Image 1 (cartoon, rainbow, N blue to C red):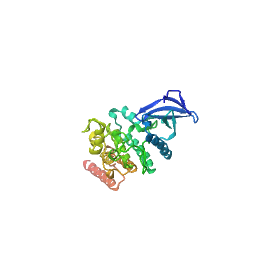
Image 2 (image 1 turned 90 degrees about the vertical axis):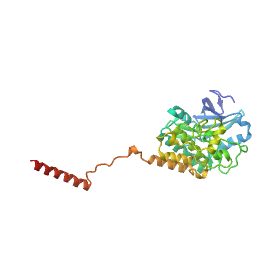
Image 3 (image 1 turned 180 degrees about the vertical axis):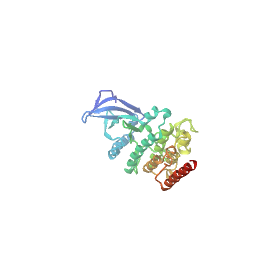
Image 4 (image 1 turned 30 degrees about the horizontal axis):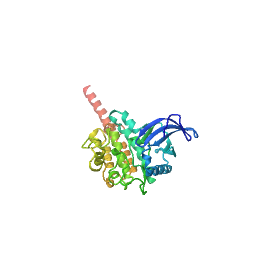
Length: 320
């Protein structure tokens, strides 16, 4: 389907391109019935050649219909036009996390900002997991930041309802290499919510260090997507503290626990991940520890003060 500014599809008038990616193109548009701005994702034509993918897109709409959380961008409508599948979402005015990272020096965020964004992501995922849904593609480009800085998740399109039979081809991996959990690579049909814990760990690692745990040509990783997959399965990530020595030790420990290869040794869920990060915020910095204050009202201090005055008076009489 050929979209252009000013074209109308059903009740939506197209405005401009917001983003392009492997899944398709996202357009800004206006819903003329409800008089509100929306985002329309037009799925790439080559993906729609697979009837299983079309079925999965329909599942996306159903899953989103079950998710009602301020940290998850809702899907408003799904329809087909000129053999293309269009997904209508609420329009979030702001930016994406990947663009925010690109705009910062060294691609890094300060710890308080990174923890705030991580907290929003984990809260939304914890809610989705309680509804039996895992995201399976948590990455910076799927995190939107509104004008207030609140982080919101999009694209549950490749989400998998827990216990549901996958509709994709046998052995097909779905996800982005830099943020995929080891089990998503080795056992894609046997995933649970702990896979999202690992992916969030990768995103937090990137926010703090400026790059994901495994990058092509760095720290023993080869120069192909396969080498990144292999690293997630076999290599231990370099400590974030080694990359950025100013990071809190407790934060580095939490991050390494989120990136455990074995899901049974990983932080058990996004709710627990969030609780641990909140405790990092509660630990006072060493340079923020205040020295003990002099309390003149303490009894011992009072007597010491009286003795000092008497001593000075006696000394003064002697010298007179």
